[in-house]
Structures are given as structure tokens and as C-alpha cells.
Image (cartoon, rainbow, N blue to C red; front, side, top):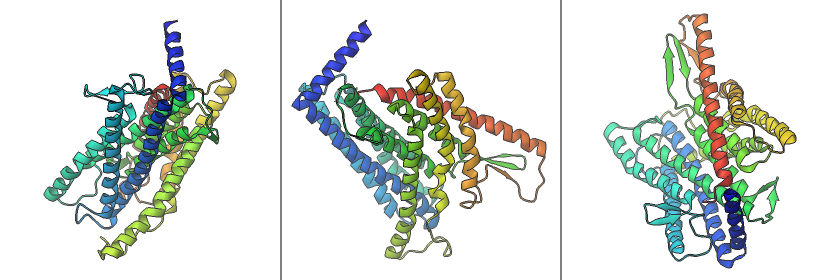
Length: 411
């Protein structure tokens, strides 16, 4: 009974806020800020892949390379915007403006009060900004490297990931408030604008995972080398496919998310090779290897096709579940099993799509010219698949939990 009363009070409060002019202003402030942040996110996404390819094709002769300029202008813009929202919301909270209270904000450092998503995003941007001068100092000490695993690369990557997760919270909280206010917004393909924002942010995170897909370490067992790059693909894709289903409660959303990811990779692959060639020509700088000039690669653009079958499987299960129970949600154990099963197509199709993109695409790489034991290879394959399925199950569990949080959180 107490829980019902709390929920009814929250709904009534939200209805009043939706009608009050101040409440409308509050929603407008947060939503305009959210779309601006999404622009910065897409900018940073292009910059991250551009930087990866710039290191590979050109090198790193200075800190302010063109991709670094794009990345850090994005980080600075997003961080300053998040800071501005935190300060404005703190001021509005202390002046008891409708729509800014303990149900729609979280305390930060015992003084500030702001939406959870903007707070998380701000800390992520701050971490990425702190990493920038440290990464530059690292390069001055140890020279140029193109590995993802340099310590301050990882610090910047972590900051970026935290910031993008904050972006999902920003859109998800506004979608939850809109949903519970009883309003009837326009829809496209069954999704509101805010739900589309959630999916676009999730697509950016998935593309962010793809940015370092061939930078993950290779494990050597005897004469067999095992690439670990499918593991982050499995964890990220399974998690966000299921999170999208739980957040929107829309059958077919996992497949739609894969399509959004394809648009991301297509735009990135159209932009990055052109941007490198243009910047090299304008600055009159040489390539690392004169015969290696970046060009559009269809296989990278089509990499999301590796996740399509997994997405369809999840959507079919959700459809059957919705017809049977009225909800696309599966129990936790069934969700974890689904995550383990849909791992297999990802592990199978990703190397096939990338086979012409890089010689390191195969997951299992026997040493050239050296015989290997077929029994040992079979054992390694089985153990590797079991590990990948466990990662997929973990991603499914996280996707279910985060999806439920994003569905209901109004902060």
C-alpha cells in the first residue's frame, strides 16, 4: 500500500509539473541540453576513430593533431555544458523551482544538486580532460605508440565511456518523466524523440566499443594465438541490445539498434579516410608508409551485420514473450541463457566479415609453418567459446539491470 501511495504521489506530481509553466521550462532546459550533448557525442565518436586511424597512417608528431582537436573540443564542450546544467540546477533546486527536487536530482559533493545523467557525464568529461596532458607527457617520455593500452589512453577511454553512459541516463530520465506524465508525444517507428535519443546514445557506445576492436591482446597457448577482440564486442552488443529492449519495452528494438549502429559505422567510414587524406594534403605531411593511403572499407562499415542474427533472435524471443504474457521481458535466468546463445553468431560472423580488413581477423591463429595438435586446437576452441558465452551471459545480466534502471529512473 505504501508503495502504491508513493507511486501515485509521484505520478500526480509529474502531471502537475507537466502543466506548470516552470515545469515546462525545466523539461525544455534538460532536453535541449541533452540534444546538444548528443551532438558532441557524435563529434567525439568521429574523432576517436579518426585518431586511431591517424596514429596508424600518419603518426603523432604533436598533441594538437586534427583528430585530437575534434576529440577535445567535444570533451570540453560536453563538460562545460554539463557543468552549466549542474550549476543552473543547483540554483533552481535551492530556490525550489517546480521540477527540480529530490525526485529529479541527486546530491553531488554535498552541495550541488543536478540530474544524475549530467553529473555522471560531467565526471567522465573531467576524467578525459585530465588524461589529455598526462597522455601528452607519456608520449614525450616514451615516444609515439598506437596501442590502446597505454595508461592514459585507457584513462581517456574510461572517461569517454562514463560520459556516454551519463548521456543514456540523461535521455532515459526525461523519457521516464514524459512517459509517467501521461503526455502523448509524437512517435517515429513507435518511438518517441527521447527514446530515439536513448537508442542513438547506445549506438554510439557500441561504436565506441568497435573503435578498439583489434587492439585487444592476443593470448598464446603453445603454437596457437587467440585473439580476444570478440569479447568486448559480445559484452557490449548483448548488453545494449537487451538494455534497449528493457528500457523501451518495444519488440524489434534490438534489430533497430543494430541498424542505428550500421549508420554510425557507415558515417564514420565515409568520414575518416576522407578526413585523413584532406588533412595530410593541407598540412603537407607524409604517411607512415607511402603506399598505404586510407580509403573507404566496406567490410568495416558492414561490421554491425555480425550482430544482426543475434538481434533478431532476441527480438523473436521478446515477441513470443509479449504475445504470451503481454510483456517482452524474460525472467533473469532465461535472459542470461539468451545472452549466452546469441554470443555464438557474433563470434562466428565477426571474423568472416573482417577477413579482408586485417590479417588478424581470425580468432584462432596457428603459428605459420608450425604444426599444431588438432586435439589441443579443439580443446582451445571449446574453452574459448565457453568463455565467450559466459561474457555474453554477463552482458545480458548487465543489460537487464541497466535497462530496468533506465526505464524507471527519473533523476
